[in-house]
Length: 396
Image: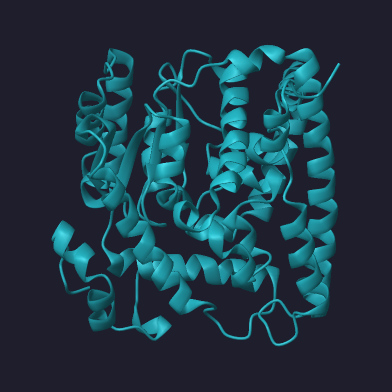
């Protein structure tokens, strides 16, 4: 039996070894004077990640091989009207995804464990069987994992609640072919990874087709296991520069864009990126790549709005972050109406409960531009079209 039915399908699954080898070489032999310089801490981090990533990829590609033998039906799995939540980082995309994901009869999303450790159907089936066995034994493994992840993700959860069992950014699944800007947080070489930040504009057409072919297969794998008739729900700020590519692969896809003032997204994003750098390396300055982050945020804000102009209104919805956190029930109802989705009674009750939680919620975050050497004037000037488009207050 052959692994792939056509040469074209084989090409869509090729791993980006060239990029991987280039960044490994730079990490080991050309990192002096960069944020990723080889300190003892950095060497330990690279060794740990190298081992984990190698094991992760070996098992994943064995799983992909077995899928073609054991679960060949995934090829016929339809992906109908998937929903992609986009917008700049720290704009409420996670809250939006987890609100919609509560409608379990309608939507299905990838969870953290699946994105990193089970992109293939074979792996999903294995871990699900392991979970059932664990349940029969009183869930000792599940409890152990919860304790470990609480400790490992404790600091990160101050920015973004992380759990192996929570839905998360499925765009990270592209790390399995080493074709994702997410790698920048570990291997911060702008010249090498820049195309993946500005995906539609910078990645060559054939390369985009390969990447999107792999991503579609991963979505099909997920639906094949977790709900062939459900709507796939995705969330990833980096998909904001991939609207055209997503539209080509999923021509009936729908997009949700979260709009939040730059006075909040900018410092929150810089804080999160700084946390990653301080955890995984010894950066030369407290807030690395500040100008790059400001430029990328501008693209994540602006590019979707340009592409939406060519889409019918029924395929996209812009949502105010403020309205989302204050009136989630109303926002969800309006969204369902726009996308032609029936709002079922059971989910209406869930929304009512979320509305009550929203009224009691008090944010723990305080945003300060001065902390990063930024001024309100600079932010307004750099994001002038965004302030104008959404009518954001020009004072922090």
